[in-house]
Length: 435
Ligand code: C2O
Ligand code: CU
Image 1 (tube, rainbow, N blue to C red):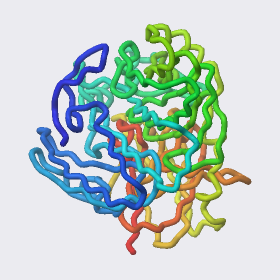
Image 2 (cartoon, rainbow, N blue to C red):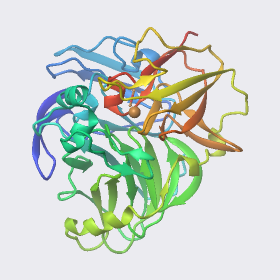
Image 3 (tube, protein in one colour):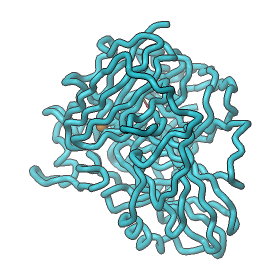
């Protein structure tokens, strides 16, 4: 059920939109190969849909209005029903307007019955940048960006520059957020995860933000990264990991003997969210400030450091077709474009079933774009080694990144920037093929 109501974020209460009144919405957990059936009852005063981010599902359940289904009207219902082919950490959210930047999001965890994972317990952490219900709705923010541009958003003064990040190679974002959340809570009133020293915890990190990349780590605790966007990788150690909007990372940690915190620093923004990992005596959550600052000085693992596990590597094959997507913006009206054009569902990039498709993502703008492909999991092309399998990947300013996928799931598949303000103003296109 998508609904409007009050939510307690810790630092403040807001009226917002959620799934079932909870923030994040209640996790859905299924097994690989299951048929997932979800009845959505839309209690909002506006139309909505659900997109099942990262799932290679049948096209008519993908939740893209005017492409794969009609919008579900206010007061309407829709039954989503599809087979879930791959295990991993996924999530779901609406695909209408800027609804992603409200409280409409929840985890979708697909377990693998044969996964002999080396861990005792799991912690799902959903990260978000929050502004809804505090004076400006996401729709207001978009309208402001359209009239005033980004500089005004950041400083209120024309000509002033936006915060920058080396890790992101430029601007950190376009929108100012009053709060950063982990599992629906601000840093000063965090979610506490009760555990024991020595326990092995599988972290499932999900960035549900709209305009914020997060650098995540646990002070003095090494993470072993095991999955990107649901798919296994050659395990790699990290002090911190970077997640763009829409990305997920699974990593295992060993719980230390005293209480600590998983910190999610909003990259380049000087704010953070946290989940307390309580293995000893409770601590005062404000003591994380110094640790969060310290975290930003540590190296961050990025997609370049990750290789796909052998079991999920795409077979070696030269691409049958290459599409270049030049990413540009913002224009005068805060338009973000692909190949000079804003989104038109009837003007996509043709491909044929069975083709190995290469997407050349060329970023000609000064901001990073987490580019997402619906219905498929691509492999990042990394000279000389098998790049990570992913469905969302950060393309840095002035960078060209290539990804390959096999056209094995016919339909009309959106590919877009997962910054909701970029996607909504045009940075989306369609990969289209019939069986
Ligand atoms: Cu999570 Cu089209 O996106
Ligand atoms: Cu973007």
